[in-house]
Length: 92
Length: 87
Image (cartoon, rainbow over all chains, first blue to last red; front, top):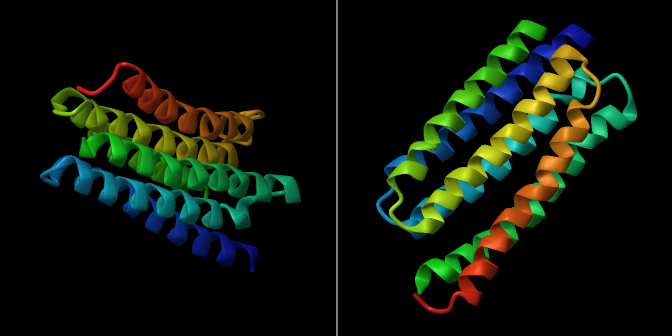
């Protein structure tokens, strides 16, 4: 059972890795600063969330399971804020 | 299982590392900052995966510190740009 869950976790982490790859492709290929910002801020928040979710079956204690989500929450907060700040600066 | 986790961590690191090309290219300073931001988020993901794969102590906490500092970088960047005045 736990083996099966861990395989499922690996799949979810792989989806997260794909999100990071998509964010990079967007950052490299999109034509202007604002669309690059858009690609980046969505892709990496989602990617980290999927990684945190996929790591759940590998955790050996409650704290170990919850800490990735704490880090994800921080990234969500700072990502949403900085996306606005950078966009405001890039528009000038 | 640990090997599969390490492989995925390497893939994420490679994807994020390629994004650093944007730091070289620019053209806007904001573009360079965004590539660094992607590296910070990707670094958090890699550290969390490594913590699960290797069971080394302190890796998860390092990821948490990186998450805290990653936000400060952008805020400092925008504040500095404001203080310097319009371009």
